[in-house]
Image (cartoon, rainbow, N blue to C red; front, side, top):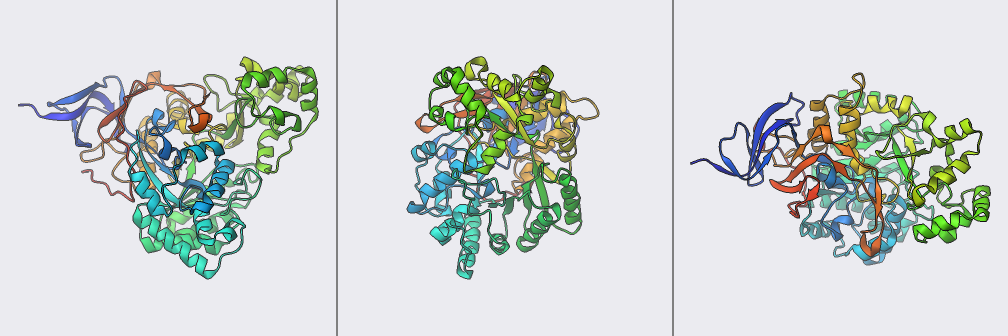
Length: 578
């Protein structure tokens, strides 16, 4: 009698996540684990024909912000629509726990400013059925979703929880405050947080312009969090650095965190305008740190870091002009109608942006760096493709063309504003060096945040098409390496060793992909958040199936309704046989 499995994926080209050459094989699954890879004679209760398809481990995104979304809905999209089966949230030092009742409003305002989540979405959607971080994990334990999720304890809420109003007002901590932050960090990690996170970037502010509580803190406070990890004996440290500092200064702090905590450290790594070549110095510094025994890795995005602008989105080049303020909350057709009025156009063209948040002004003011995104979206345009370059060719004011572009397609046109990873022809030079480096990890999907300014959670699909399938030979990342970069590498970076590989005993998180048909559509707004809030969605074709813990969650891009996703508490050692 033939053995019966829960699921058998037949005849696919298996890329096991280790970087090994592909092999044609069946994959059998039972009780949420991979139990056979090769020729499987038994049958599956459910079977998937994967002939002429890739079979890969599920993808892992270690940089997301589903901290709120996971509490009000069961679909962690856009990530789950792009082959991602595990996400790590609580990055950048922001989140919703720990929080006393009187601190909830502040955390909502912080997430609104830093992560572009409308306050009404959070006040409507977040249930606040917790206070401490262990309470928050207990609340998450009751959630069933389409993919797995893990949480980090964020610095800003922790600081405010310990220090109260003094923490929000950026006052220095006392020794007692530091000891309590250290204790609570260790407590959170022992309860199941996979790490702790903080932010030093001056871009992270309340909508009103004040800095996020973690940003200007002294190094002693950062190291108190590192001490908490050391006390717990596990966990990872995630940091968004202050890129206005030189690479030597940034690297010195990262090394001190790694030394003090004894744990892996990762940070957002990008090529920025302040120090255009600093990414090279950062990579050399990571190599030196590795040679000295420290585990520090840069989180990188598979395309230029940037914002999406449009009349239906949070920002556009006229959004901060005084004459646009009365239009902000109008339905899109009313905005378009108003902006077609010649008198309003004259006023908007004559004004300049005014906003208390300097980062918002930075985003909308660089008219040289605006492009029509297009469909399919082009995230690596040439400088000659910019709206300003077109204006020069036509002898016109760039603002005129920008204004007209915003009104295209009845106001639905999306403009692309790349801000980082912009070096070289078509903004590819920096990325081509950073992405495959052994001390970087693909990440920065930011799913669950920036609902109306970015849609980077789709990066796995873009990575597989732009850098793998469609790239010229001298720029191409080979497929086995690419799959490793989406699976085992990010899983290992956060100590989730039980996933990211196709091997006997491994967790059965899998994708079946038609690489030839893989296609990324342009992002589109939808209004399906709590209270009718808006977010960008981005569809992909070519994912034949996604499997989480042995359960098929998506077939040909459509959700099956299965919700096997659960909270991942703490580090997971590999249970896969070599």
